Each structure stands twice: as C-alpha cells, then as structure tokens.
Amino acid sequence: MNILIFGPNGSGKGTQGAVVQKKYGVPHIETGVIFRNNISGGTELGKKAKTYIDRGELVPDSITVPMLLARLKEDDCKNGWLLDGFPRNLAQAEVLWKALEEEKMKLDYVIEIILDRDTAKKRIMGRRLCAADNNHPNNIYIDAIKPAERNGKMVCRVCGCEELLARADDQDEVAIDKRHNIYYDTKTGTMAAINYFKEKVKVIEVDGLPGVREVSENLLQKLA
Image (cartoon, rainbow, N blue to C red; front, side, top):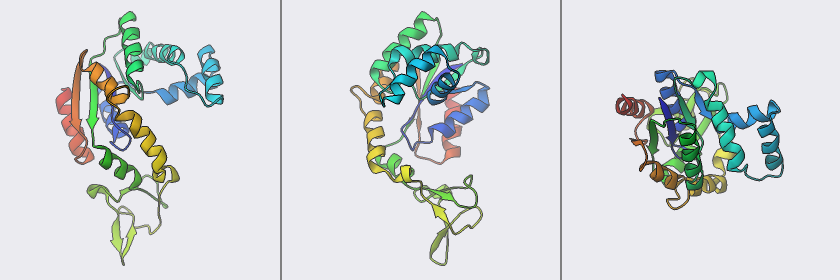
C-alpha cells in the first residue's frame, strides 16, 4: 500500500503516520531524513542538494524527486510506503505524480488530517516539555494531555514534575505562520496539492480535532 499523508503543523500528522506505519508494516518515509542520508552518504544527489542548502536556498524538485524515487525503490518499500513531507505545493504534486507514473508506481491513498488553522497554531504553542522526561506529553490546549495543577501551578500530568518548558521554536509565531501560510494556501500551496490529488486517487479525510486515539481509530477504519 503506497500512501501520501498530509496535515498542518500541529495536527498530529507524525503521530498518525506512525500508527499507519505500525499497522501496515510499511516504512515511514520523511523527506528530511532522505536529505540528511544523501548528504551524509556523499551521494551525487546529496552533494548537489548540499550546495543549495548551504546557500539557504530550496533544493530544486529536479534533485528532490529523484532522491525520493531512489528511496521508494529500496527493498523495504517493496510492500508499500508512507511518504510524509512532500509535496508541499501544487507544482511539486504535479512533478511527483508524473514521476510516479513514469516509474509505474501506483499511489493507493492520500491521507488528509483536517484541522483549522487557529487550533493547529494553539496546539503548537501549547506544547510543554516535562523537565524530568521529555516523553511525558503535556499541552495546555489539548484536554486529554493538559498539565495537572498543584497549588495553583501547572505540573506534568504524568509525573508531577513542577518544571514544564516551552521550546523556543514552538513559540515563534512568525515561523509558525509562515509554515501555515504555505500549507493552507489553496491556490499554489499544500492544500492546492491535496486538491490536485483528489482528482487522481482516493483521498481519506480525517478530522484532526478529537483526541489522538479517536483520530487513529477513525483513520484505520477508513483505510480498512
């Protein structure tokens, strides 16, 4: 089963991708990892990509797509794959679709986790890290994992640690808005890419507003 997964930052896309990966036993392919592996491995494509990255420029699709295809042809992808992080815009969607067709790779499903922009932003900015254990999830805007309260102060909901930290990048509204501007753009951005695929393959829409478990159950039920 070959799948693309989409969702705005803050939608829980990575969590749901892991659920799908575990259920179907397919590798979770992330473009950032592909870039890092090609660069650290010194491949020709990696060297070309590095020149753009070092200049602070976007890596052209003519380099990114061949990297992706090479990864999707590896042995662990024979029974399927879950691609995350690409395409990010309409132009990339068109290039990827053409490349998959040329390679005779069938795209079975596109997963779209739907979440309104305001909620997505709040979820990002509401993340809190437990100083005792970063694996203890806390979020002031998600009821299921909201920090506990002790003597009028927020504490970790899991262990009671009194030190909850907010990552600097989670509080960078300019960066968050920039990413969301691209995602929610229905003309040329990520939403435009999703709409493009709706004309090509089955798109499974999942409401990202409920809790993680409910979203997972809904998603797996629709994929069955």
